[in-house]
Length: 310
Length: 297
Image (cartoon, rainbow over all chains, first blue to last red; front, side, top):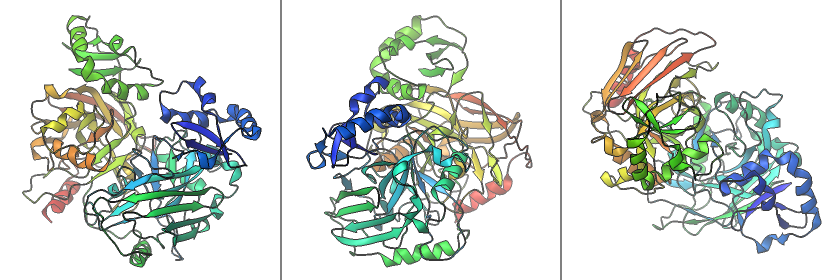
């Protein structure tokens, strides 16, 4: 099932005829406090809602997708959890240490929205196409066996990243937490439709030019292992989202006027636009230097760098 | 005014060593959990303040009951990288911050549970915490920014060292129970100068951290200006101002931790480690020297 957010805080099911059927009314009995509660409520009560959702989707009374304004299917997750580099990127090195960081869940971008580059003196702003896992229930200390039970579905994600901010020698992740820098779309696909999340193709195109093009077969730590690990650290909630990391081979700049299309097979495609009031310009095309740098750094995953503690 | 959230979800104002129940002043605010509720309460706090003052002045003073953290699950939990000069006279470091899991928060008299992860040590980091009261973006680096705050509280940023990738990792600060917070949100009018607060932390009565916010590299308003240049702040967000690493030490099973920010409050927690690991007691002088070296470079 495909779950979309659209127009003004509406939640819908995307039917097979590419229409979207409004099901927001089915969520009112749970007394949402605001639009941010709709998706977590749908996820929490999905088993009981499912027959009605399927019935509505089959009834054929939806609006054509072209006639609605799709929004980020995640309105305001309680956590956006991002994996640090989690792809082998063409190397045969040993697995890196599993690690993650948190990204601001404020002012998320969705299909058709605009990523706004801030005036900060970044070296460059990169796109990072990814697959993200939407959490299906409250979970802590998941075992390997139960990890997939805690998955609700999957969504395409672009982790817009400002480089070169923060302290030298300590990778700073704050450059990923600017407002509008988390882009999700086009909808959430429930896990039953993605039997194997480790065999999906992810592409990013900028103004029609292919940049990223990789497969989740190359992921260092597969989805169940991510869930097991993350839930050993922090309690997960319905609607939390785990962004599985990107393959850095194929990153490139995003700049004023760009249209960035992120596609994951089995999920779909969505576009975000880029605005930069300062109209800064970087070289177009793939940033091969960044790709090589990540490969080189990953060969020495535990190299000590100077820096302080927080 | 000192605002608290009780274990049974009542909202109180501390007065004369007791608490006045002011829950009725927020009766119209819809909520489902305490975590939902406090951001909404804080967002409307200023406009309700005259009524709260009156209730606090005239209401019955009850003994202070068991308390929850004043914001049980902040919309965002944001932390400053090392933000103290630590006795050196070096140039300021580049300003930087990061996010922690908001699910790491526990309240006064809570229990920090050390996870079964192979950390090299678990440290306490006593910090001044800011609680956001208004939605805000691009705040100025001056006094006006304080108006975006609901107030101040105490926080201990418990930190598992040696976790994750060396250099970038902050994962060891996001374990459940690793951010004790409270006891009260102290409104900004009660704190004439946030850059002149004395922070202390003891473990089992033994002094560990003892520093002043005069030594902060980037002041409270500079912290607010910086982080709000990145992301929209919302009511209930908690911002940790960083610690002075001179005086950190190990936490281990059975420890009792007490931290105080003078004028703001005292926060007590205990520590449980199902694995009962042991580290040397007392101040971690090696850590302290390492931090001074960073500052000197």
